[in-house]
Amino acid sequence: LAVNERTSKIPESIQIGGHTYRTDSWTNVTPRISSFVGKNIYLRKNHPLWLIKERIIAYFNWRYPGRYSPAFTVVDNLSPVVTTEQNFDSILVPADHVSRSKSDSYYVNKSHLLRAHTSAHQSDLLRSGFREFLVVGDVYRRDEINATHYPVFHQMEGVRLRYAHELRDDPDFKAIKSPAEVRSPGCQESHTEEAAAVMEKDLKGCLEGLVKSLFGQKVELRWNESFFPFTHPSWEMEVKYNNEWLELLGCGIMEQKILNNAGIHDQIGWACGIGLERIAMRLYEIPDIRLFWSEDSGFLSQFEVDNIRKLIKYKAVSQFPQCTNDVSFWIPEHFEKNDFYELVRDCGGELVEQVKIIDEFTHPKSGRKSLCYRIIYRHMEKTLTKDKANSIHKNIEKIAVDKLGVQIR
Ligand code: FA5
Ligand code: MG
Image (tube, rainbow, N blue to C red; front, side, top):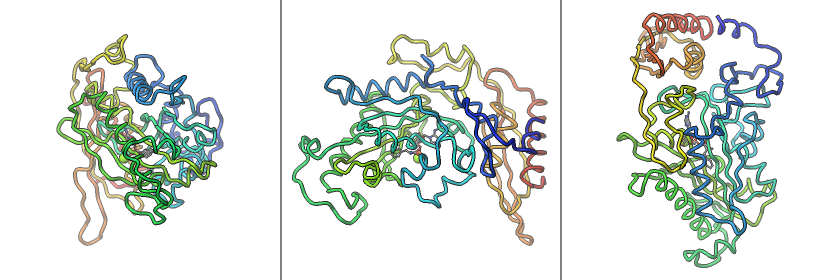
C-alpha cells in the first residue's frame, strides 16, 4: 500500500537530512532511500565500517607522516546531497555520460542528487587549498542486487598532489623533460612521462601497501586498466575472495584540467576511491552487504574490540532459510532493469537477498521480449515464512504491472 501511495503522487517537496528540496520530473529518490541519509553508520564507534575507516586513516598517516601533524586531512561530515555540478561537471563527466541518467543515480531534483561517489568533493576541497586529503561518506546508486552490491554504500576518496621538486626526491625520477604534448595510453598531454611514472609508482605502492596492511603480505591482488573521466591513466584493483576476483577500488592520475580549474597549475595529483564494504566483507568474512545495516547486537557486538587491528572473523548468528520465487513477464519497449530492482527493494526491503535474470526470451514472430527473474528472499535475523515471502512476491508482481507496464506470463 505504501508503495502505491507514493507512486500515485510525488509530493511538491521532500525532506532529506533536515533540508527541504523542491521536487520535479527528475525526482526519483524514494522515502526508503532518503531514510538512509544521516544514519552515518561509518561514524559509529566500533561499527565494522568505522573500523575499516580508522585503519585506512592510520595507514595513510603512517605512510605519509606530516612534519607537525598528519599530512592527510580527513573529511567525513559532508552532506551526501550534492549538485550535478559537483558530482559530474566538476570532475569532467561528459554531458551524455550514462551515470547521469535517472536510471543510474538518485535525483532529489534536476539540480541535486545523492552523491554517486565521493569524487563529488574533489574539486571543492582542492579549491579550499587541500593537497592531501581523505573523504569518507555514504554514496548512493541504482545498481544490481546481490551479496556485494547495495544501493547505499561507503567510499573513501584519497587525493595527493605533488610539486615537481617533490617528485625529484624520488630516485626513479631521472630528468626534467618537456610534456608529452599528445595523450598516450600511459600519460596525459600536459604531463611528462617521468612525472606520470613516479606518480603511478607512488599511487600503486600506496594502495598495494594498504591492502597488504589489511589482508596480510600474501594477499593475491591484481591491477586492471580502467577508465574514468576524471583520471588518466586509470586502474582498478581486485583481490581474490572465495576464489573470485573482488573489485576494491578505482584510481588514477588526476586529469590536469580538474587541478587547473581549481587554480592549481604547478602540481600533479593522483586520486583513488575505495569501497569500504568490500574491504570489510573480505577482512571480516561478512557474507552479505545488507548486514552492515543491522542493528542486531549479535552482529554489532562482534566488532567491539579495543584495538582496531584485532583480527575479527564474523560468525553468523545462524543462517536462516531462503525462499525462492520466480516471476516472468513481457516487458514494454522502454523497460529499465534498474527500475525493477528498485521496485523489488522498495517492496521487499531488507528481505531481498538477490535478484537475477534466469531467462530471456524474444518471441520469434512478434519480437516481444520477456524476462524471467528469480528473487531470493531471506531474513537476516529470523526465519522468513513461505507465506510472507509469497505475499511480498505477489505485491511485487502487482506493482510491476501497475508501475512498469509489464505483463505477467
Ligand atoms: C568510482 O566510484 C570512482 N569515483 C573511483 C575513483 C576515485 C576513481 C578517484 C579514480 C579516482 P567505482 O564505481 O568503480 O569508481 O566505485 C569504486 C569502488 O566502490 C568499487 O571498486 C567498489 O569497491 C565500490 N562499489 C561500487 N559500487 C558498489 C556497490 N553497489 N556496492 C558496494 N560497493 C560498491
Ligand atoms: Mg569500478
